[in-house]
Image (cartoon, rainbow, N blue to C red; front, side):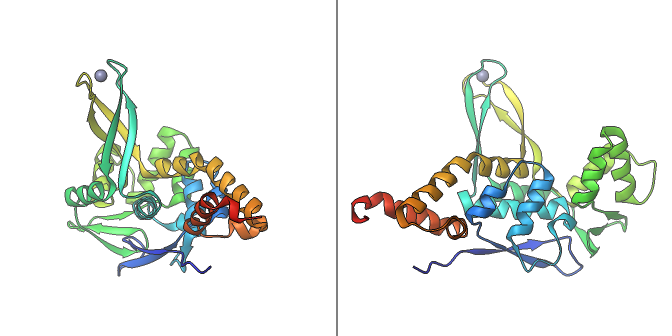
Length: 257
Ligand SMILES: [Zn+2]
């Protein structure tokens, strides 16, 4: 009963001057059940569990690199296509927003500007301006200080100076180190009313794992009942193997006994 769990090599742009790749391993039940929310701290905890021989903790990655890892994880777990259900603010009809993650990532890269990484999370643009991208700890510290003080703190940390225009700097960051957190133009399928829909890979992926929690528990239950294995053994199985075994049990329940 050997089945190879997958690993995925994902490029990291902001770890060192030379591009690096991180290796993500396939989640096990214990990883899936460890997710407790959709915030950055939860994303960092999940990535730290799944990163295999990483160059640093996920907390030290830029948001852009973190989102790249989360997008790769989404692709391996559920595929490249994202479908979100939206309610039209005009006619209240429900309609789907659907797109491919890889296409969105490509667009962001194409619209962006080249930046050169000089050391961990420190990038230089074509004009020689230097920016330090915040890690998860800086983002969290800024969030705790409230909106205005937090934004000011982040800006000072990014540029190393004061008196920076928040909006202009935000646009520079979007171009230089894009994150998968954006507003997408949508249109109601019924009445045509336009609507801006917010999509961010972090909360989308973590929410998807939270939504699957009951299904994971019932798969664990099925395997415990079917094979008599212990809980640590079952939640230590790679996700794809666990699901394949559950299907097998469902297909041949009479063979057990
Ligand atoms: Zn409508």
